[in-house]
Amino acid sequence: MTEQTTKAKVTTIKMGAIEFPGLRWEQDGEVKYGVAVSQLAEVNLVRQNQASRDLKSLLGKGFPFDKVASELNSRKVNTIDTESMAGLLVELAINGNGAAQTMLRALAGLSLTQLFADSFGDKFEKAERQAWLEQRMTGKQQRREFTDAVQDYLKRHPELSDSYRQWVYNHCSDQLNALVFGLRSKQMKAQFEVSSNALVRDCLTADELDTVKAIEKIAMRMIDADIEPKKAMMDAWNGAFSPRYDRIRLLNAE
Image (cartoon, rainbow, N blue to C red):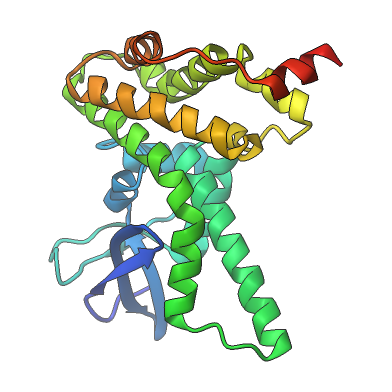
């Protein structure tokens, strides 16, 4: 039987542009680090008010949550440690969660950079690590803001079906790619010969990515005004511009 010997201490975990409360506690004489399950919804990894259910569907119904009280909450709440969180990010990324894919890529890159720096005897201090993360995650920030807008829309509409909630992000991304490039996400990945788990936007040029971000920004404002996300994406496209890219044309012509 495990025993939590102290209340968890709380600090802010900074991951580039993302910040969330992290926990440190002792269990059976071992120091553990982790995050309350409810906080995972704040960074778009799981659904608000469905966090524990979503985690169990990915990690198994019998997954043993840590029950941790903290300086912020005297009541013990479901918590996962950093090792379990790493596994969760992998599972979410495989299932197409954009926030998880962004975090996983950045963290994997950071770990490798740190390993190489250590091997060469180069300094790679805290400030440098955070700057490295922020630089690589800033390009993904627009996407997180768009998903935040969709998440807020879902919160405002509890009547929406579970099926809609599960697929709305993928549908919006697929619709955007079809509008801008004339190709569905799956087709674009095939054209660029990238893995099914890769993000389509990682294949785009700077100009193409700027166009995608511009449409998302317009759609995000519409969603905040309570327009249904897929309709907002279409309206944003119709109200902006409809370029087609030579690189896509050339690939199709080959």
